[in-house]
Image 1 (cartoon, rainbow, N blue to C red):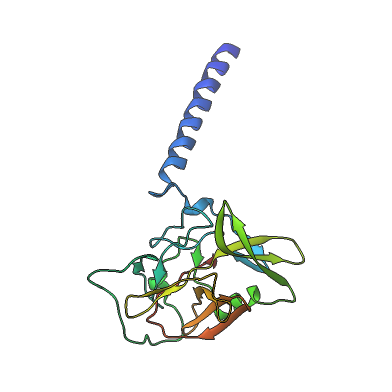
Image 2 (image 1 turned 90 degrees about the horizontal axis):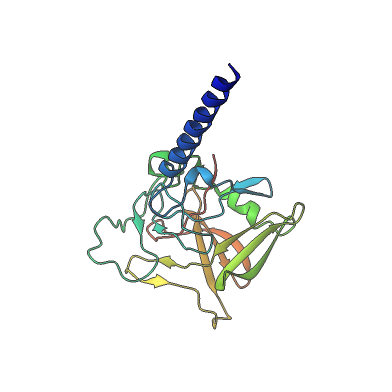
Length: 217
C-alpha cells in the first residue's frame, strides 16, 4: 500500500504541475503580460495599476511604456507615436455624458478608468510626493510616492493626440509651460496633467487622445 501511495502521489503532483503551467501560459496576452498578474500599488488609499493601458484589455509591456491613447469614453486605441493614416474611427465631436461607460472602458479585467476624485488623490501634495525620475535608463517619468507608506508608482510623461493628428510630447527644454503627462479620468472629460510645476486636474475636450492609468475595481 505504501508503494502504491507514493506512485499515485508522484503522478498527481506531475499532473498538478502541468495544469499550473498550462494555466499560466494561457492567462498571458500577446505581449507576455497577464492582466491577472497585475497586483497594483496602494497610493493614498487608491489601488493603482503599475502600467498604462495598451490595447483594449491589456497592459503596457512595462511601467515605462506609454501604452496607447484613447478619446474620452471610447474603447478604440490610438498610437502614441507618429501620424495615423486614414483616421477611421476618430470622432472629432465633443462627447456627451457625465461618466465613462463601462462598456467603453478599455482597462483589463478587474480594472477601470479612475474617477476625478481618485486622480486628485495622486495630486494631494500633503500625502503624495512627486518627482521626475529615470527608470531602466529611460527618462520622462514622474514618480508618485505615498508619504505614509513609501509605496510608489511611476507614470510616463506622455503628451496627447489632438484632432489634427498631431502628437504633443514632452520637451525637456520647455521650462515655461511643460505640459508633459496627460491622463484621463472617467468623470465628465476631466484629465490629470503633469507639468514641471506640479500635478493638476482640469476639464478638457473629450476628442483628444490621452493615456489611461487604471485603478482596481
